Figure 1: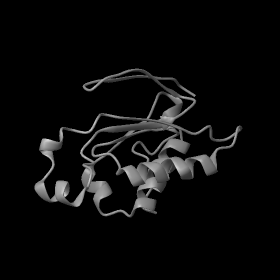
Figure 2: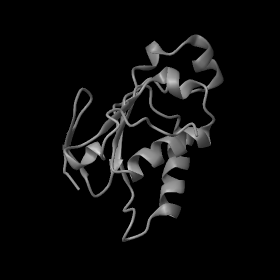
Figure 3: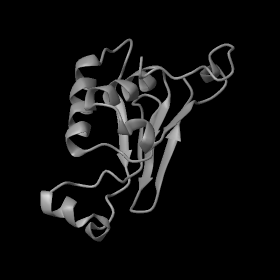
Figure 4: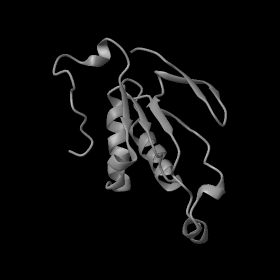
Length: 135
């Protein structure tokens, strides 16, 4: 399954001792369809992990992530996600073709985690400060 994350220590659940953070590179996400990206993210978050995307999602993918999340919420099992993204870079950093085609850049860091474990304390154009609690 493309969303599976390896158990790096081979032992018990490492989240029992702390918070697991999955940092996913742009190269890892590049070959995936939008739904594969969403499954990869949601599977990690449902396990209680914080997922950090190097390059973020497109606006359409972010909307679909929220839509799929809403269908999977259940009070006893999954409370949803918290998502924070650094602001898009200046439009000067986009290629001419991207501007011409009206494409928005996905070159942005995105932090996604379980709504019951992650709380954004502060966000500005250079910093996202987040409090992450254990289970």
